[in-house]
Length: 208
Image (cartoon, rainbow, N blue to C red; front, side):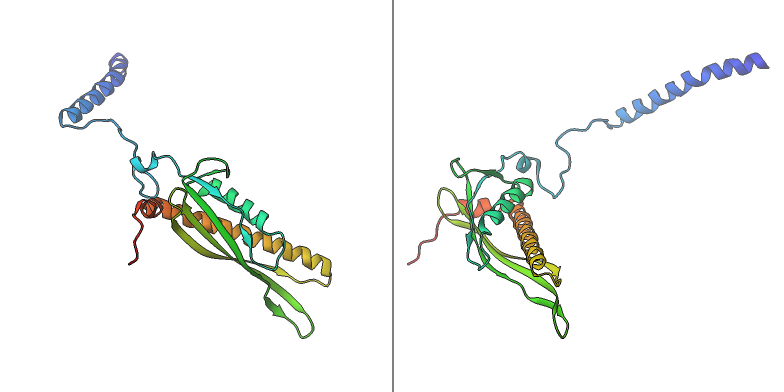
């Protein structure tokens, strides 16, 4: 009995291997093929052909500061360049390089409304920033996309006036970063939909 058990145990591995080979042979005969070809699915529904197209080259010009808050144009422009380089689908280039699109814009307003207050003092305020962005085709100078975006950031008021100013400056910076991230995300959506390239390639309308 022990010898027969040993023989049967020795046959287990070859029999299982033969069984696997038989199943694979039957599946192949029925038309099944174990191969994966092509680029596969992509997030967002973009086709493989579209994802292989080179990103548009984008120049971001320094924003015009139309607010009463000084020295915002350089910081906000840098925020735009950072966000668009990271997540807009475009390749940000310098002003001296060849480009497909040009982004310009203006800081329209910066206001600091009161959120909460007591009978004697303000307790909490909010910084609200409004920015206009405009994208033009570099060759035709035609505006292909424009967007007005608002960003806001809250801060508490303390008895220290100097510290309050530092808190307000920080809120202005945070609001600017929110605006830049929002514009980059909206730009990416337009780019994925093909709206930017369609408008750039459309013939200019002639007014009569």
